[in-house]
Image (cartoon, rainbow, N blue to C red):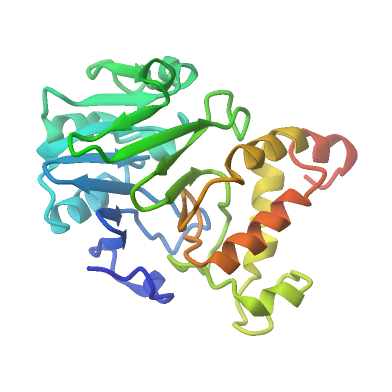
Length: 279
């Protein structure tokens, strides 16, 4: 099911996978009872697959069902990539290992994360992205590149860039809290002149820009950490930004609007706690 240009996919059933780029599937789970939507992504390339930020324990059945319904044999998954170590993206690691049941399976993350990933499971070998040349290459030659974004929001945080589709899997960066979630962003040219209030005057829904700002102010550790992370990725040739939380930024305009908003942010994390006193 290819719905990469459909902005209404937040209404799709939780049984649906969504192909957001060639061989790239959203296999996350929508929960109307929470404001923190978690996105898992599968990259399938010939007879190999990689799962990025596979989800929590509660998400396991929904994520695995989407993988199977995408026509992907779980046994072809060769890497589980975790861009940090929070339970919302690592919690179902033990279940994944059992069902994938592939002797070539490896967990791939930053060395700082792997220390904590062992608390979820020690069964599968953990590889450090630094020792893999900050990249992973499929047998076909398709290449994933890893970019370290320390303290955004943990020391071992990183993002993943698919060089074939120019998709950036941005982890917590570009994410947001949103109780009226859509898979693809609603941010458009009308947002360029909006003051990012609490409610969008066009949709009647909470302002996505405001929720993105609030999310980063709470999740990122400091002004410097967020600014440094953005500097690491601002020169990439990006087609799609696929965050772990919130909506996918699938247009050049939405990416620019959000990027500019984040670059201008001050009083983030500890800086907000000390100088802003709004938390």
